[in-house]
Amino acid sequence: MKKIINDPETVVRDALRGMQAAHSDLLTVHYDPAVVVRADAPVRGKVAIISGGGSGHEPLHGGFVGRGMLDAACPGAVFTSPTPDQVLDAVARTDGGAGALLIVKNYTGDVLNFETAGEMAESEVRSVVIDDDVAVKDSLYTAGRRGVGGTVLLEKIVGAAAERGDDLAACEALASRVIGSVRSMGLALTACTVPHAGTPSFELADDEMEIGIGIHGEPGRQRVRAGSASEMVSALLEPVLEDLPFASGDRVLLFTNSMGGTPLIELYLAHGIAEQLLADRGITVERRLVGPYITSLEMQGMSLTLLKLDDEMIELWDAPVHTPALRWGV
Image 1 (tube, rainbow, N blue to C red):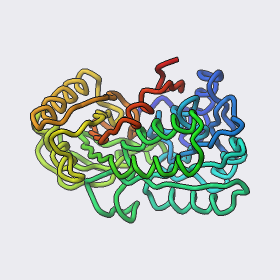
Image 2: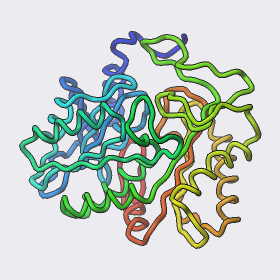
Image 3: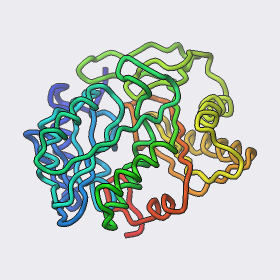
């Protein structure tokens, strides 16, 4: 195993130190427990938007801490849920008097630990669970669908609503609307290697791909021979389109995401194919996001996410954001 690390046991803490050094104008990192907090937190009168999950999916979630997105993120060990004390600390450090909304990906450990923290918090806390992965109904890590690429879009849109002054009930209702309107699916061409494991999380032959892979390397719908880029995009897009379903006349945000090891030249190629397939169906791509925003360490692969947009979602997506990983309008 070749990785740019010192010690597998300290890789998360070491990475957090580097994040603090690189982005001290935007965020503050606390280490015991590990919490990444917006530099100007708490913002008085503002609903705190908090998320988190296992490390290894960077820039999710710490890279989205800042104005217009998250107030705090709770980084667990690699591919491991954060603990309730991390979430409690995040709430305490960001409580501006308007309560906190917890954005939770649908993995059993995440749901249980965020729920426990919400019950223990002294602030008013509500939570939403995102489950946008159409690949499977249940997996080893979840009861129901997994939370994947749609999490990025949810955090941006709800973060913008909180920034403009929406109250806790309004932020929760908006989050539920986004969750009901977003669907995702991914594929892997190679496995990733968790630092403390030292070996790939699964095996794929040189001519194979896994359709419907999870962000922790969970198995997908099927393992098939790797095809052309057009075949790969169709294999992801068709199940997504059928699930909501999406139809002619819909306006969408198309998010083409690298799982960590896919170069941008390939990602843009895939995105162009997806845009054309959507246009052929009469679906208008109003907004776009392309890049490695929710990854699985160095896994080579991609995911496609579609969000059915309305006017308010477009306005909130376009609103200024200033984080390490997303920045516009500032």
